Amino acid sequence: MQVESGARIQPQVRRRVSSKWRDRTVPYIFITPFILSFFVFFLFPAVYALVLSFYKYKGYGTASFVGVDNYVSLLTYGTFWLSVKNTLFYLVGHLVPVMVISFLLAVAIHSKLVKWKAVFKPLIFLPQIMASVAAALIWKVIFSTHSGVINNLLGTQYGFLEDPSLMKWSVVVLIIWRAVGWFMVIFLAGLTTVGEEVQEAATIDGANGWQRMVYITVPLMKPIFLFAFLMNTIHSLKIYNEPNLLVGGGLTSVPAVAPIMNILTDNIRSGNFGMASAVGWILFVMIYIVSIIQYKLLGGNKTE
Image (cartoon, rainbow, N blue to C red; front, side, top):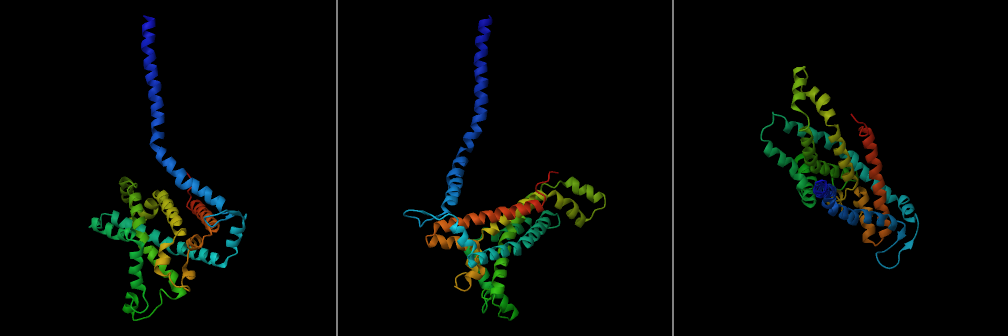
């Protein structure tokens, strides 16, 4: 009897071991495509670009090792620092307006006071899904000096796309117009995490709408704000389409609005792949530093 009972127990043990092994293995099988694509399309190119940044390479032939010469050339290149200044201008110029406008629109649409929400949300989000070329053409018509909408309405001839002091602000307006819809959706999703019972309790205690938003909604949405700021920063420092499509094209106008990505693409076109890789890694370090600063300022390292 004992032998028969032991014989019955062994298959059960094997099935349990097999089940545990399968439960531990199957998740990794499902994420294997992501892991492979991550290594092939991100990690390997990133490491290869880092190594290539220390070489002079035209894309064919033999690569010659030049050490940190590519980085030194960039950091002593006046146009590079002008492009850094332009990129930071776009970041600082639109960051706060986009966050404020997007949040207020999200609060308004989320409230019970606004009707036709199904109409307003797609209309506000429409610029985000619009092609960059189409968006730039629209704002070129608006900002045109002689036949533009703004100048015709005001009876003026401001050179929004010609005056160096106005060109970058025109790009900032285009960026704000395109980004508001995207971040409004993010804030709308965040507002759903704020419980109605908390708002009702604050109302019963005598808090008005402004007080509920400042002391309840905003603190509870702190992780959403952190995410939005970081995503906006990463996208802004990699900006390329908006300034080049709206203002770019002339030899005198491009440097005045050119972002860092222009230095990268120019080196790729001229066959300086080592220099282009160095630009990419400098841009990565900039994004990392700015993101860490924002993370610290917004208290992302604090657990509540």
